[in-house]
Image 1 (cartoon, protein in one colour):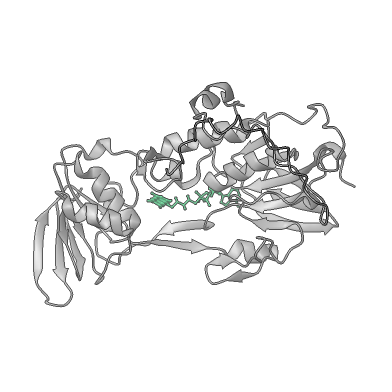
Image 2 (cartoon, helix red, strand yellow):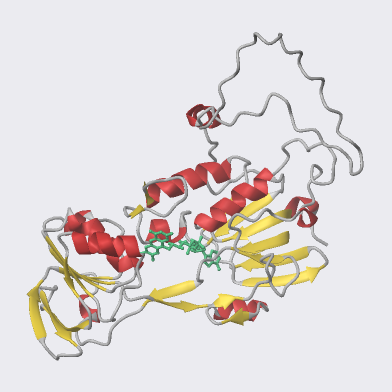
Length: 371
Ligand SMILES: Cc1cc2nc3c(=O)[nH]c(=O)nc-3n(C[C@H](O)[C@H](O)[C@H](O)COP(=O)(O)OP(=O)(O)OC[C@H]3O[C@@H](n4cnc5c(N)ncnc54)[C@H](O)[C@@H]3O)c2cc1C
């Protein structure tokens, strides 16, 4: 028997951007919410892999630093005082009966009615190349992601890859590094078209298509690279201080299969409402509201909301957004119409409001709005 105080309406596994937004939304729906993250900080890949990179494809932002986006998502998520557990990896999930899910971590067990799996692509490692000497130079000029750009100031950098990450890294380093070269071995880029256009118009030297890394030069640290064209066989030796290998990630969803979730390809199989094959377990949170049937909150059942008896976070600073300041920035267009729309039951006739009496023929004609 699970004690009521231990039971949560919604528990979100993973505190990346999706987990943080799901936490906010669950709070908005008055759910007693818990967020569990295996790292000691929230933010997912944005914080662990690219906190200083600018992101251009977030709705409502022309551009935003990954770190700033996470700060805003965290402030938003903490408004409703969820319980946040950091530094605990969820290693097991068991449906213990109707509306009781048990999540286990090395530190203990967590109980919830609904579990939202927002673990990104699970545990992953960067894809590496089988090139002699490459692994020895990891951390000495070989990089897979860039938590800070400052170490590259004034350096010569080679970026390998042609996806979004590679193109973004090359563009981000353009104004910082002395020289940036990007080499890509496919016949086309996999990055967003506009970013590829930006790359091709930039000062980045682009070696494309069919250019692959053949050799890494340097004893204790990277001093150069040999790039070769896989079609023509032509080789080019370039002097570089650092090589960023951005050629994809290898993911491991095996642990989730062991929980009993159905895995298809490189993802957890879900229905259109994001439910998985296990009752009460949904994948990710994104912008979907938590269905009320999963919510035990009094408000969801039409009763007044309870007083805030919900356990407070002990593992993490609690923040509340400055909603007054945020509201002041929202333009005042689109305020509610002065005459609210009235609801008429089907079949009933709308009574016309009486026409205002015209003030005789002399009344000036209103100009017609053509705008
Ligand atoms: C270099 C790079 C650049 C990118 N640039 C962009 C960009 O410009 N624009 C864009 O839209 N996208 C970009 N992306 C993709 C973007 O980072 C992801 O789409 C996004 O991070 C997905 O968010 P998420 O919350 O689903 O997963 P994640 O960010 O991966 O977060 C998942 C979280 O779950 C935690 N977790 C995993 N397993 C467990 C477990 N068992 N128990 C507890 N916690 C767990 C992880 O520690 C992690 O914090 C980029 C990705 C990379 C690698």
